[in-house]
Image (cartoon, rainbow, N blue to C red; front, side, top):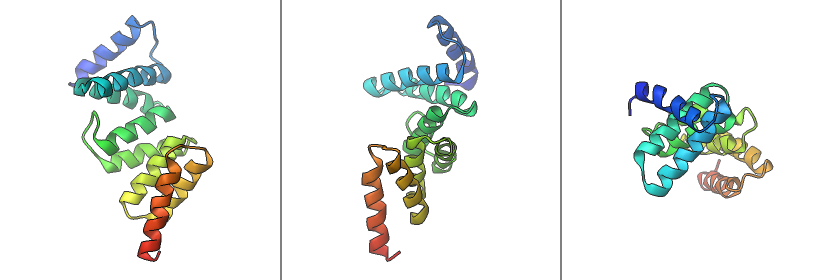
Length: 148
């Protein structure tokens, strides 16, 4: 979908749903489209979700920044791009978002920066992120294997 179309369609959708155009509204709509896209295998819905996340992320919404990072990491709804994934994960992590911290850990792990990955994953574990401990164990094991 072209950005120009989404620039018109998404605000109209928000209006029809009785929502405003706050970052939280864009994020909430993004979650709806992400859920629908994942449940139905609808690539168009995933692209709309990522558009919504990007609008909210650019306005500083940590959850949207983390969601956008995940999309870039997986290639879900956008082209896979680990640099952009790291950019948005760091923005979210620096606001205290545990999923952003996990994302930073994963991005650093993929760059073979195990110390930085461990740092971010320990922060995510401390916040109680449910997936961070297992990922941290993988990083620690990799460091042990490599003698780092």
